[in-house]
Amino acid sequence: MTGKIVSLNNERVRRVQALERSTRRRYAEGLFVVEGLRLAQEASDAGLPIHEAFYTEAFAASPAGQSLVAACAARAASSWEVSPEVMRALADTETPQGILLVMPIPQLRCAEVAPFTLIPDNVRDPGNLGTMLRTAWAAGVSQVLLPPGTVDYTGPKVVRAGMGAHFHLPLRRATWDEIRSAVAGSAVWLAEAGAGTPYDAVDWRERVTLIVGGEAEGAGPEGRALAAGRHVVIPMAAGVDSLNAAMAAAILLFEAARQRGVGRSG
Image 1 (tube, one colour):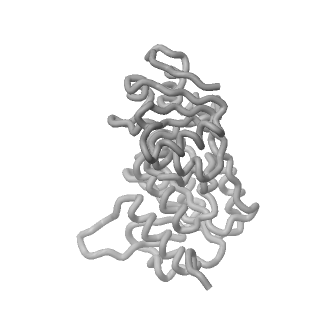
Image 2 (image 1 turned 135 degrees about the horizontal axis):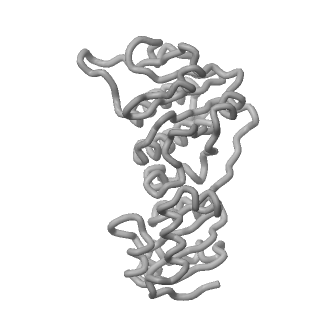
């Protein structure tokens, strides 16, 4: 199905807006919103199904937009050219780039026994979580388990900050009971400021789980109990008490990637 939408009161416009606003709506429908050239290209390249595609005439006529709109429209159940005003109403960004997709939430799965699991615990900042997901993808993490208390990973700001991680990295919300079962048998480390094992002294080559706590309060009691006193620290200069959660995760994940030989040939 194809067509053109110029009315801000169109039912499809209101539906996209509801998906962007409501976590409950996203999971009830199994859909989330992907906005912008980079993310739409990542989604197209990943070969994932597309529920609806929305684009402006100007974007479809641009050098970058011509082939992308055609590729997305070919895989979408429906595609719609929209006016610039409708695109502004659809978009979560202040300056939309002219393309927006509604997609099924990816259900990617890793091996039954995941070699390397990341748990962002009590991470409430969407930008921080999205950056963690992007970093986890780049560092070869097997799966990310998202416990209660962490911001929803399908929200628009998290998706933008993830820069395509959602299309390649197994992600799922999980209860702590589910998490304990999923990581049983792995070495669980909690990133912590203060006393603990320096991050470059940890053997990240074994089956391992890393818990990174949130910006304000750190990890919650369930995450701390799961780590059972096994704390990993990043040594820092005197007077510096902590790092941004996403930055700390990046340092730890890429030390693990270095030890595990991620990205190396031969």
